[in-house]
Length: 265
Image (cartoon, rainbow, N blue to C red; front, side, top):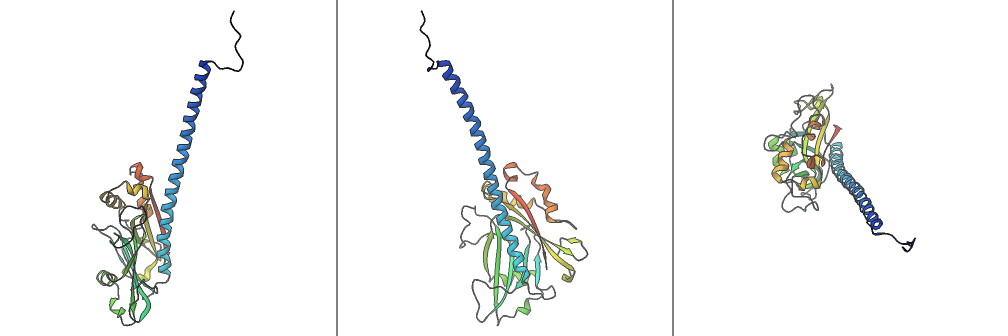
């Protein structure tokens, strides 16, 4: 006669079934946790890029608020070309540099542009070595003849700023474009002949997060920047660039963001 089965025991089949169910549930749990972790990582990367872009744009706006107005001759924009697609913004402002000339006056030539960091400048943590948005300040003393620099031109501005102090502001900025909004509402991509016709500067930036940037070589980063072409007449940078992101590889696309700010002058 068979012995009755104990109510407190499990058969081998039941144990195998329970193990299979447990493994299945653990697999589903790991997928959920992986998805949450991936979403959190992407959110942190986007927040990092947003913080870098806001810092860059707000710093420019703060300095431009203090611009010394000299009939427009105190502002100069060097439009980028084939060698360096990014624009450069120069203007006079009552700010101080890290070094002071003899008999200093609170007047400096300020430059914003994307450039490679100098060898003696500290790196941005774990960011790969790459061009970044920088701010250069060239302070003047009372003995300096600032008037000879006016109106600002490419030669005068680049010569004077060479003696300035450069600070890297945002390593995420790979593209920097300046357009000009006229009082009549039109937008020009080229500097005006008469600055009195300009109501505001429209500054557009393309930012890339650290993870996406580290996947690219320097040549690939330069090539990526050149894909965000110069805006045409009545084009805002953001309107010109938004369609570019969709054509990028996904690994890079998820790390790219476009920001734009209009700054009254």
